[in-house]
Length: 133
Image 1 (tube, rainbow, N blue to C red):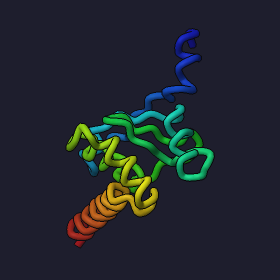
Image 2: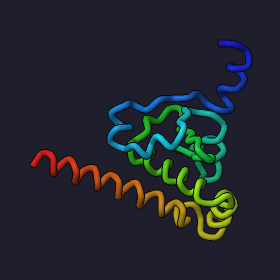
Image 3: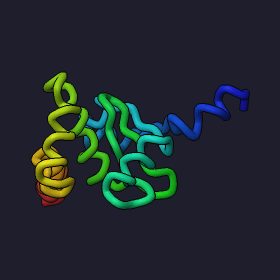
Image 4: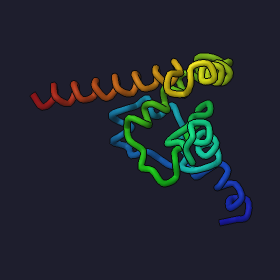
């Protein structure tokens, strides 16, 4: 590994590729770039009182915690934040203000991302049951 890569890895993490079968089931995951580790998950964790966040999205890049295997639910949750970033240039400011006003767990953007992930998982489950039936 060259010197620059050694310096950058703790800051920006390492790129990861999602499995093809997962991308086939959830094509919306293609909208994001995924990285493992990096400073953003550490800083995000500090804001919620943890040493690291499971995931944090900055524009089209999703940073995932280095030592936690990501669930499909987490990946879908974070890709919803990609959608939110794409919908408004003011999203980062709106997200921060919402978090300050309501707290992280009651933030409407977090609630939307949780609902989106749950709906997508229900939809895929229904589709699989129809195929099997």
